[in-house]
Length: 273
Ligand code: C2E
Ligand code: MG
Ligand code: MG
Ligand code: MG
Image (tube, rainbow, N blue to C red; front, side, top):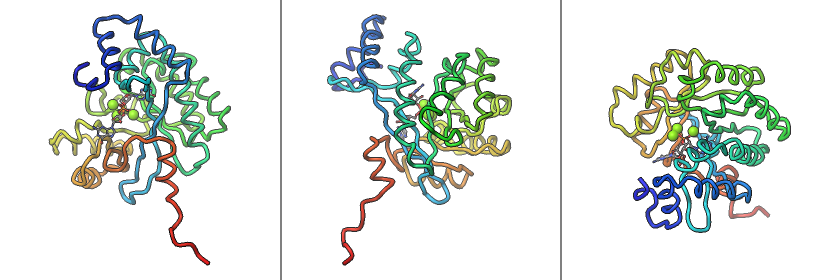
């Protein structure tokens, strides 16, 4: 794994190697320092309405780029979870993201929540506090959760969801179609949205993809297709009933400055007299 994802990035390679060698202490120390030194950044990936192509929201994705080369969230998020740093890390990510899009009232913001966090009894209060302190409308916030937690600690997860639903926060099940989450899980926890995993989008099995989208549609749960890379995939997803599209075709995760350019195109070159 380290070989694949650390290509040409000496330090990232070492960090992943450390993890593989179970030299956790060193990797943890570095991550902890990075959180303290504000080395954790956030990028934004647009979500568009399938019908109009209009950007209606953005997903915030955490980035860690030490001078020696970026480390993938697929590596540092699990590390943060295992080492008890996930709350600290998320707090920074959430705060940065809320602040960044606060002044675009027409944009929804999606944040990724680690299943561990959702089971933390303080989670709902922490989100409420962040929303209040950032003066952010809860109806604009969508929390994306993967399914793992629903099997291990369903009661705790349910409590967090219920408390946040009460103030208008919505929940999306992320990476749907990859694991054990069923249509029953979606209904039981009251998910507002479903994101079909990109492995299904690119997997080439149209029947399975269409059936998965129809499952959610049968529950009146709007579907987002993630990982859209080609026009063909976009057309298929739209025809199959996806409400929102996300993927490299529409836009890669980008800096706040690039997002601003995307949302506010530069004024026309020709000035009026
Ligand atoms: P995710 O939430 O399912 O995010 C989608 C991932 O797919 C992102 O990878 C994104 O960059 C990538 N992606 C988007 N469109 C395309 C596409 O068209 N093609 C391909 N090949 N990839 C695409 P990223 O940023 O590396 O994040 C990986 C995962 O790490 C996320 O999956 C999410 O589960 C987790 N993650 C990222 N940021 C956070 C965070 O702040 N907190 C938590 N708890 N998890 C996070
Ligand atoms: Mg996500
Ligand atoms: Mg996903
Ligand atoms: Mg994912």
